[in-house]
Image (cartoon, rainbow, N blue to C red; front, side, top):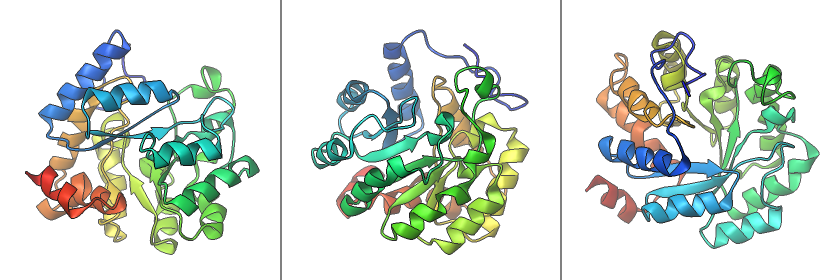
Length: 273
């Protein structure tokens, strides 16, 4: 299957592996090739997360995704239990937009409370989705539900929440900038933008975030989904960004995520080795 995200981007040649086992191995190969030391993977299956964790202990941290109705696959109590046992590390990616659900929907209140009380990071899907989604796999998807400002009431109620916006809210970059300015603890990632968009479009968005002063809160990601080859494209796109200094590239590729995840000095030293 070709990458349906590609459009006019430079990733049109990407194809997906035949099955889950081959996919995992291809991801591991890409991780090795690009010297990636820690990666977040999320799923609607706890068993799938266990498989990835066991494939290379210490490499993956895990997140739970949402079901078709927008609810996370674990109950709030189960989320805390799995988090305490280090079986799940992140609440998300929360794909509420695909289910036609706003981030401030009442059904999410107990999840947000558990996350804030226990320091569980939250990853919220923002921005767009695959072209044609409402007419195929996500009939309730609405573009406007991807606006980052819809998350604001949640952040107001939960000042200690640790959260980041997946995909930087693109194309609502001005809203992402406003949110990150008002809420200094809020981070963003640039997954999918760095390989699924035309390079010029991605660089324009990244430049806007950098110019706004958020170079210390932008985290690298890929959201490679079914196309492991996107990982190398995403890494290369950051390394080749003409407006980023070497320090800024290092922040995006590692330092910012290490700070967000509160990695120990020992873990950071280990990664640098």
